[in-house]
Image 1 (cartoon, rainbow, N blue to C red):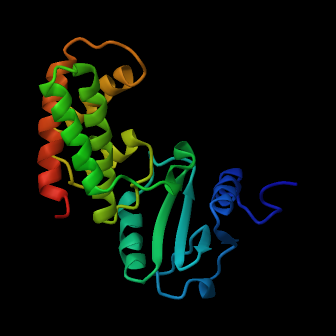
Image 2 (image 1 turned 180 degrees about the vertical axis):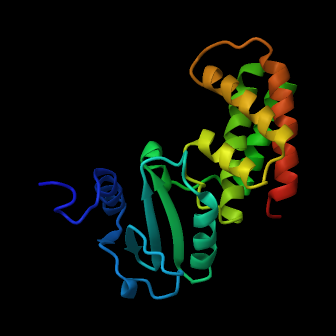
Length: 216
């Protein structure tokens, strides 16, 4: 039986619905105007998922690379006005990341403290991984705070969208892009020359962003 005959427009929608169901959500597809109890300017999502008091407006895309984040940002801001409702952008290239929640600001600060402690004790190998976790979580938290609806997409795409929306300066974006290459090597078990210097630069960037963006 095809995905379309089961009520899904594509296999990726079917996959998203399966992941939501496994997480305890009841999922409705084939959404009509009466299924959304507030005005979204004519927009209809791919599905609505409910679990207890939590209700998700779900848009499914094959990839976020060419997706208009600005359009969905407006929808996310409108949905966020309704208690218990949240807009979720699901991308096939993000698999089930949309079901995960970014670290809290306190957890992010803990990772920064761990990185600083490791550096002070000479345990250099542990510094960059702790900083990178804090960096990714910081950007995901920022995306959530400004209702970009992209907090759960793959990190490289998240980085581009935050820059395109003016959340990161050109300098910050260029540095972060360079750090991403280092992360791809370090986190997969490869040695990287100059890693300590990169770690210090990354620490400065993450601490700056946390001071600017974090909740008290």
